[in-house]
Image 1 (tube, one colour):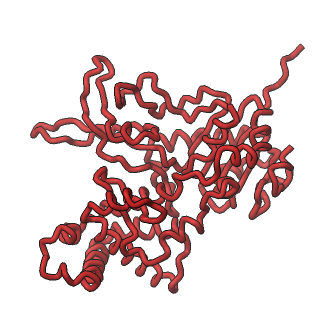
Image 2 (image 1 turned 90 degrees about the vertical axis):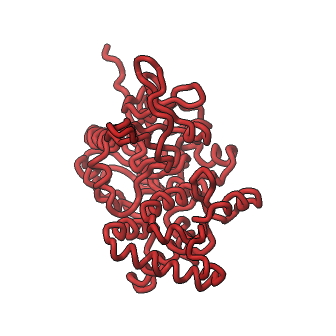
Image 3 (image 1 turned 180 degrees about the horizontal axis):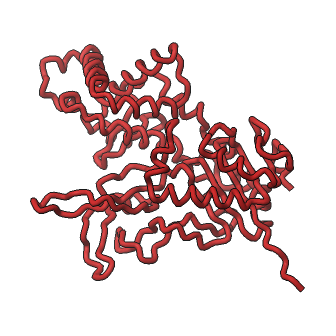
Length: 388
């Protein structure tokens, strides 16, 4: 007698999935940027950035200690004004705004004008600084530290997505039928386009073990006397979560070595590691894999690593982790017989090209804004209760 065939499920999650947990989707994130941005930013001694919104007095006080905080809020406000003037005074969405800023980085003349106009507006609002050209508030304009702008954007987006709006009981109730559906399969591959940690949290609440392809075995990254999980691409649980566009708990550790002059120099090698612990990301060190001796004292780039903007393929094609994840996505989609889609609007070409190669699968399309375009064998549903 032949053994029963394994039941396998592929899941694809978009922003609408997280919206079930009252998390902000594109418009919610965009609203933070589409307003007067002057004096809306906080910058902490740790180099991290956040919005002033919904912060208590202690956090606001700490976030006001940096002199750069005020200046960069004017830089972002100037970027916003230019962006909207280029789009008939409209703010399309935060990803388009992100791409505009990324593209502006390539034009030195544009950068100079942005910083010059931002400084002029700052001095109009704070005329007391006019006679203090050497003021710490104005240093960033003298050196045009534009390289900080995109990392600041990542911090600000992560700050919006970090809080989970629902409590655990509400999450369990909202996603009960989704969790029951996942448990009914022997093997589940979950591909999510979201940067937040909603799917991880509800799997944990449902008692479902999962892997994101990270392991501590053979990791050379340590913090607080313990190994940190680094990306290996080894998914060793029956439920596997692939963050197609990265995550707010994902960080990149770039390897450096001393050159002949004794200065740190990037080697081109790197590891991605995961943590939600403040001290782990700031105290991360690299050790020799053989001796265990510390060979690098700190990570130079503690910025949440996720892909946004309208041109994601450049990063995907040139990054070893994302290349591997998309290779798995391509392979698994070709093999998929059962597909569950939730909250995805089918607007990403680099995702659709893999979906379109399999028109024989059976699909369930949940919280639809569009019908599933690549197969007629399935159903559209508006409620998790209709999943079974």
